[in-house]
Image (cartoon, each protein chain N blue to C red):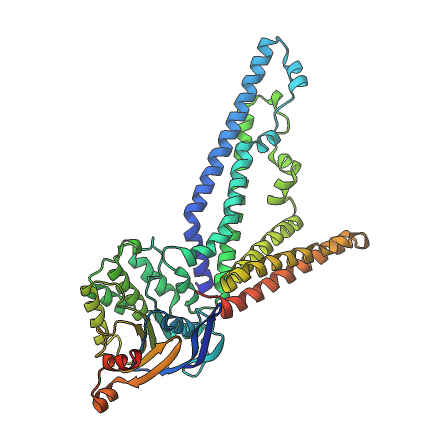
Length: 229
Length: 272
């Protein structure tokens, strides 16, 4: 379980995270939803210790993040993080060299699924294909948790469909996923838990299935209630 | 191969084009310098002896011989060394900042590797040191060849000291780069490595605290510099061996401090 406990973060005088708390369980997809600037990306970066927090605590399976955590949790940012002059193949070799739990078979499967040529340079990839490679590199590590930052942002319809297919596949099963988005449409039916954020605070946290069954509301309905109140 | 060595290998590969370019510039410019300077000296000698109808001995007494030192101090020779030094100093900054500000933010990938983050610091520092040592080794490889070319182009009677060892020892800055004793090698390269570590720490201060970090980084470098110079203020009270020992201890302490601070910054403060 990933536990985010009362974390705060300031950039200068601006408080971007303000006592934020939530939990993400293994085997569930937790979606952080909020408009731009609500603290979604900062939260994911804080979990990966890419941004230091001013207060609070983050635990991954009851331990603070350490070097071994990076073989347990993977972060897929919204931009590709491999060097532009590397080919897809070199990027995969880089991952294989550094991660003992790199799954080469899965990487090949995903490469075929996305219909990409491994000799293509990273700099030559379109935004949609770069997002697919980001996903490939992140999901080909055998980790327990996957953090994804805006995986559908700014990419074409067909790429979105392919990425959404990955969410439906066995690649996500049994893993704990935290995904951020401000476009809920593509994945609304997939998410288990929604955490609505505004100004670095949790406005509402709910189980999507429960709210559907008990109140007959969709995630978008709840978002309207909370954000347009 | 452990992850640190993989990182070093990766950093060296990233610098390989720059390194190859520098080697090419050094070789082309210095060989050209040896040929141009030698030939112009020989043709000048012929012209002067012919036009002024003077003997070889008279020419030598008025114009002197040509030595390898004259070649070494020419722009042909020192220019590419200065260029290499300047680019390597620039590369100390580039090696970090390109990972943040390059086209793709590679620092994400580096900081999320399942290894101690300080290994990134050590790998980058090792890459810089290996590049410097590589250039020095290449220079040492070129020197005997340049000496041979000089000796083949200039008649023996016009040659002064053609031995490159003598030329290197004649200039303090060259003997710093290419030390002639192991003690001096340790001191020169110890100070060099410490300087790289200090600059890396200053960069990490900046990457952690932005503008405030620049100030902290500069203050840290000034503090380290003053600490290193402190024994020289008491030079009269210390024997040279004591001074050397004290400097060695301070060098190790400052480098260790730099590593401890950098480790803390990389683990707790650095922001992507």
